[in-house]
Length: 200
Image (cartoon, rainbow, N blue to C red; front, side, top):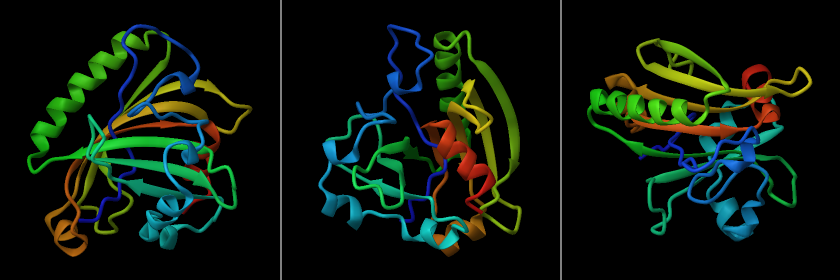
């Protein structure tokens, strides 16, 4: 199954609010960590998302997708890493689960948004509603997302946590073996700026 996930599910600490994005984790992993602290260089390189590599116009970052029997909450984790970084520092971390019923995805998304809203009372919440997924040129696949923005980093975008559901069209699911998914991402301003302005 193709496991391309732009935004994925997150586990947030329920006991404290922090304005530092690195204080929030998925499966105990967060931005700023070295992926080498969790996986070998060989494992990382074997799990590079080659489909994403083909889509990129700018080569600054790439993604790695890992499934692990030790994951407790999620079916998959995805990491945004910088090209030619020997330390494999994580700039984006995400984890997700898959759904055959998009309404169940939306219901779970609403629950997560409420939990995060209660936790991140002083961040800027932006609801982007439902819009066509740019990964599907037909315009038949949709994304529903909510962002929690942290402080802007010198005009280069914002650290943020994003929650969303992807509803792939039947044609896209069949062609690429995709599946609808619930997702949240913890992402640095640098990676966010690249993704939105340079990657495609």
